[in-house]
Length: 620
Image (cartoon, rainbow, N blue to C red; front, side):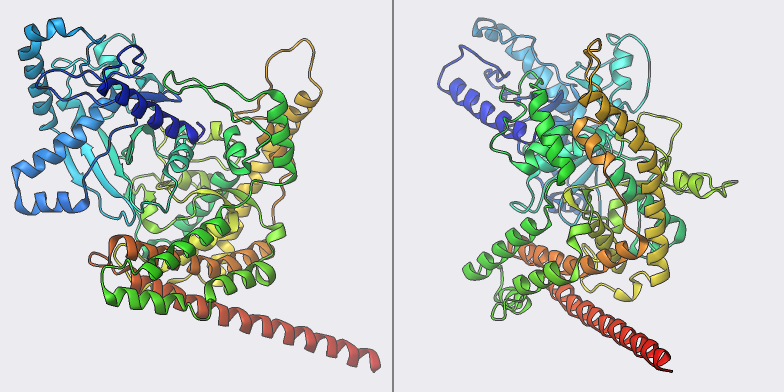
C-alpha cells in the first residue's frame, strides 16, 4: 500500500467527523453513529483491505501497566483491558455495529438495549489478559491474549471486517458464514504496538513496509492499525535472543541467512519506487479515496519508466537523509535546551562536540574516502537487528541435518534456494516452525545492505533498554565476521541464481509481449521493476563486503549516538540514560577510527615492503 493512503484516510475521517459534528449527514462514508448515553464508535476504513482506525489514539504507556501490576489495582487493570480490548475488537471485527445508521426515531425504544450491549462488551474486555512485553526501547508493547474465550461465538458473533485478508492462526477450510470459521480466523493472542520516538520515524512509511513484509511471510502477521500503533501477530513459542547468544554459530548463520533473504529474497512493491524516487513527472498509483480498499494501478508506461530507472540506479538509501535529519533535530534540542535536566543538556553538548562540528565532518570523510559507496548494494534493510529484534524457537529439531543449505533452512525457516517473497516461509503454514524470525522493522527502508550487517555486529555489544555501556569485547572476531559474510553471500547467491533466469524471462516477455496473451506477466511475485533489478544484480566478493561493513560500523556509531541524544531530549533519562549511551557510541566511533587508520598504515607499510623486496630482487 502507498504510505500516503494512511494520511488520506486520516484527512477523510477528520473531514467526515467535522461534517457530522456540524449536522451534515448527507454523504457519510464512515460509521460515526452518535446515540444518547453511548460513545460514538471509532471510525474505521479499509486501507488496502486491512482495517485502519484513522481517528483512534491509544493513550497508554509502559508506566500505566507497571503501576497496575505493582498495585494490583483492578481499576487500572480494567482500564488497560478495556482500552486495548476495544481497539482489538474493532480491528478484528468482533464488535456489534448496526448495519445502518438508524434514524433517531428508534433511539428512545432501544437505548436500554444498547447500553446493555455496551456493558456486555466491557465484560468481555475484562476477560482479556494484558501483559507488558519487555525489550522495547522505542515502542511500548503489550501481549493481549484470551481473545477466543472473551469473544466466544456462542456469546458474541464476530463480523467479517476483512478478516479473510488476514493470516489465520488456525487454517480451517469451511463455510465463511459459519461462526466457528470466523472464530478460527481470529488469533487468540496479538501484539499491540504503541509507537514511540515521535517525529523520528515516518510511521506511515514504516507500517506500509511492515504490511508488505508480513504479506511476504518475512515479518509477523499484520491485522490492522490505528493512529499511534498497530496489531501484529504474536509469535507463540518464540523468545527474543540475548546479546551474548548472537555469536553462537548456528544463530549467527541463521541471522546471516535471514538478512540475505530480506535483502535479496523480497520483491519490493511497485509503490516503493514511487515513494523513494518522488518523481514529479509520475502520477502516484492512487488518487482515489481509500475507504473502499481499492486503488488504481500505475499505467504500464509509468511502471516501465520507474522500472528502467530502478535497474539503472537503485532507490536512494535513507541513511544519509536520516543522519542529517537526526543531527539537525539534535542541534535544535541543544539550542532550545529541551532536555529535562541541566546535566542532560551539558552532556549532549559535550557528546555532539559542536565547536569542532565532528558529526558532519566525519560523515563526509566516511562517505568520500572510507566506504566504497559506488559498489555497495542498496536493498530493503531492517537497520536494527539487535538481539531483542530476533525471535528464536528453541524447539526446532536439529537432528540428522548436516547439509549446509538444509542447515540454513532449518535455522531460518527459509529454503536458501527460494527467490521471492512468495516463496518465503508463510505464517499460515502450520507445519513450518521458523527457528529465527526478524521483528520490529520500524527503522527499515532502502539502505546499504552492508550497513545492516554492520549494525547487527555492533549489537553484539548490547545496548538499550538495559545496557548503557556496551561491551565491545563481544564484537565478532575476524573469523566470525568471515563466517557470517560467507553464509550471507552463499544464501544470496542461491537466491539470485534461481531468480535471474525467471526474471530474465519476465523482462523478455514484457519487452516482447505475445500479442495473443493479454495477461500482465509476473514472476513469482515480481513486478517488472523488481525483475529488471534482479536481472542485473551482482554480489560483492567476501573481501569487498567486509570492507564495506567495516566502514559502516563507524557510521553506525554516529547513527545511534544521534538517535540516543534525540531520545534523551524527547523522553528524558529517568528510565534509561540515553545520554550515557550516546557518549559511549561516539566514544567507540573514535576507537574504531583509530583501529581503521592503524590497519590502513599497516597495509601501506606491507605494500611498501613488498615493493622494496621486488626491487631488490630485480636488482640482484
